[in-house]
Image (cartoon, rainbow, N blue to C red; front, side, top):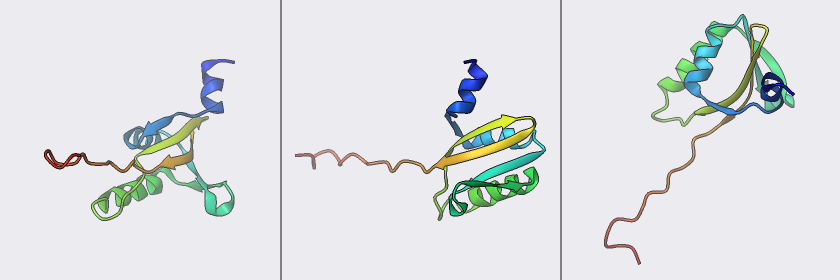
Length: 98
């Protein structure tokens, strides 16, 4: 199995900025929707980038995914899944630890 075939079989988690760069160079974007049982919905690259920008604009009040699994083939971007950021647990202040 070649490295390219291996990437298609198991996409790795990649950052939002990588997804935005990939979306700028394709003709179509297909996004997986769990609401539709995992089927993909086609979105124009410009509309997809606008949606990401809108999502980032409200990030102060609405947490959004930071990592994504996606692949590119034949000038088409396939977005398979997203990962929400992990909650950070803060350490207890000095003097309050048991």
